[in-house]
Image (cartoon, rainbow, N blue to C red; front, side, top):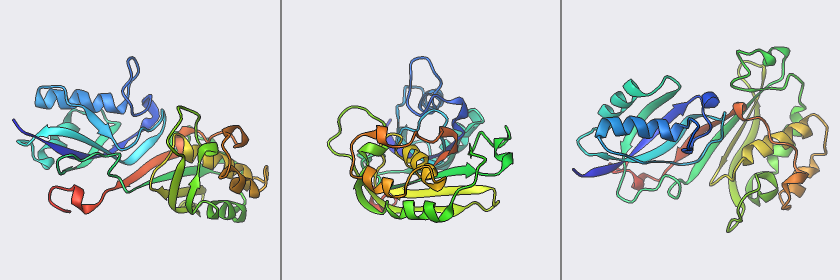
Length: 258
């Protein structure tokens, strides 16, 4: 039976996962999705995500694709998967895509949000799962100046995790802004770019928080964007404050042109 590439829009609480990518022993989002799809379609069905979130990182807009028999309509697939998935993973929607669709290469932008709590209550066990419980004030003006350095295309090798050599480390940042949370208990950092390197957002937030606490000069960020050694950056912010908010694709990738 013919299979069609189907894009899944996913929400998940990353607290109980060892990250997105399938692993031999630990629980992962990818493995949970593949197990459910195998039950539904009767064969192993690989799932490819738009990005690989780390252990503890959440998503309210992760995108992933699987080749699903065309007898399954998107709406039926959503209902069936949600009936079998554990409560910390949810399929928000499904869309049929054109042949050859690749959720990584075809993405034109991705958006992340990082949440920080600055009040004493930020260390409550009921909040610490979804924010960095900093519990200390931040200088809004210094944060804004730091974020303003990020717009445009830069090299982020010194603001990402070390790993195998890449062809290049440049990313084009479309938006980067700090804003007060609606509950006034902290801040959110929003960033949209054409691509992200491993732990890039967490390195950025860790460094900007040190700038916002006057622990390092704001000029450091511009220097890091020209650097190659992440030991010059501040330690990365903890994972639980980070959310993958959305991934955008051009209309021509969708089977119905949406």
